Length: 265
Image 1 (cartoon, rainbow, N blue to C red):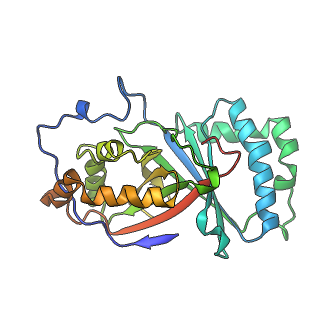
Image 2 (spheres, rainbow, N blue to C red):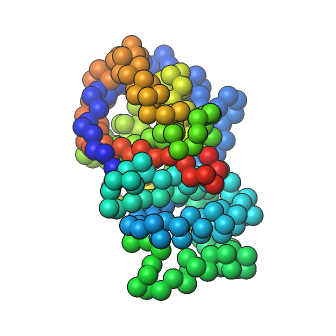
Image 3 (tube, rainbow, N blue to C red):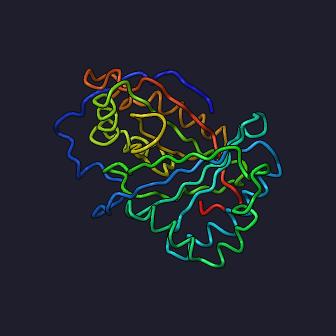
């Protein structure tokens, strides 16, 4: 995971901009989704093989059977060089109570339990991961549902950029969320074709208050060109200079990911 310095600027949107003009999807907006972001930390090729088998052959098919679709399984680009390797699983949920419902349904799913046996029944001294963590998020009001990226490059060349923006206080966090929504930072990303997958507030996690969002690109060059265009865009310069949006991000983490062959997106 790469750590960046604070993005400059924050601001307040001119009152003439209406919420109805800042759209994620055309037409009436659907209910805001929740996202379960699960991180599997592992260190060996053996663990990765067990995790891939579990996710591809047991978990994703079981989730699909209960109508949980568009599940992303993403691997960190840094896995080739770091000791602590990671797989990210993004599960969109229509409601919070699905967290417990999924667990109950999986326990009663004979096919899932049979296919997941290697993972579920691993010995204590030979676990399939070194640690597992979960982050719970809620989609932004003006980006209420996960969007599948439109990319044509081979999966292992793609760059899915996960950004985590921490704020010093709860009020500063709300201010940054407002900047994305009422400030139309979401609209700017859309206009510049960042292929955003989700924007969400963290409801539960080890780093709070913070928000997370994910954009996607054909490759690293495509990613760099998009961010160069973003940095020089007149609207971003205007938005980031507005006095009321100053100092609303205190720390940024950036993680570059690519989708597993069996990922839904």
